[in-house]
Image (cartoon, rainbow, N blue to C red; front, side, top):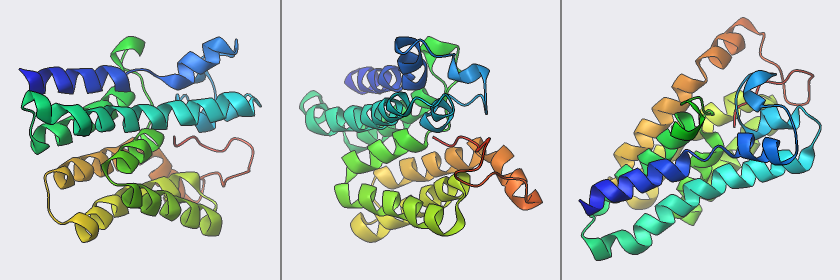
Length: 205
């Protein structure tokens, strides 16, 4: 019972779409109604409100961190094992992608995944975020940076901590990030993907 409650709580935390919440607070258009239609920080940035985009980034990353931190800190006291904690990580991620509060239309999960990784292990989070920045710097594709960092995250975890219970959860999240970027992948292959800084840059957060 405690495991089910923990997973549900994590999902509900993930369902708080900060792109929508922050946009409403700033009286901005719904981020699902313009640009890429993706409720993430990059799309919010299209409005020109950098503070709104920053708050969206912090909120989406923070909720991923919070859900996993709470599971790691308190779950064991209620009999939730390591597998249950891993399930909470997946649940908060799924909450972001399919938020129950916003008709299941969520973002691509990159920022939330970053927060999850930081909660699982700070060095793991730093490694994944550093990978994003390196790829983004050299290739200037936000989507490519997101995909590469997502794919490498389970590998970093394996080499840092071994094949523990969280590893399958990270593999699932990596697969979902790649799936959510399927349109971006097609554009990359066709040479049509916008580079970072170009007008109309595709959102990936």
